[in-house]
Amino acid sequence: RFDRHILDSTMFERGNFELLSEVDGIVKFWGLVVENMFLGSRIHRHWRETVPSVFKATTVTPKMDLHLICFGSNQAEEDMCIGEFGKTINNRKYYHDKRKLVLVAKAQINYYIQ
Picture (tube, rainbow, N blue to C red):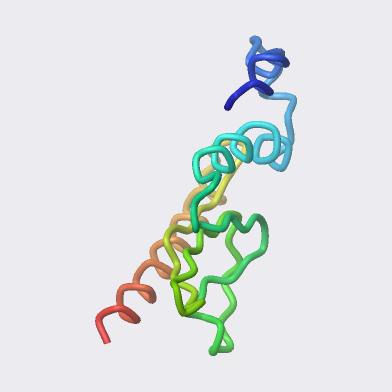
């Protein structure tokens, strides 16, 4: 499943990973991992700027880098997972992304509790 990583392992060599942009890392590394992990399942992978289902009927639109959705037998959309990616850890982006993830998770919990 990870033939791409085996065929082109240069991204893992010292110093090369740092040369990748944030989107390079998502597409070339995490994209392959996540897509292969859920291949053949009912879980759909949505990348970049997706809004979680619980916010579709609101004016709040937190955009996430990764959004895993499971469609039920009645085609109802159920959020399974959300995620944010960053090339490096810097305080500003880390805390911004973390705050966004916590607020979205809280909204999802509230939605399912009601």
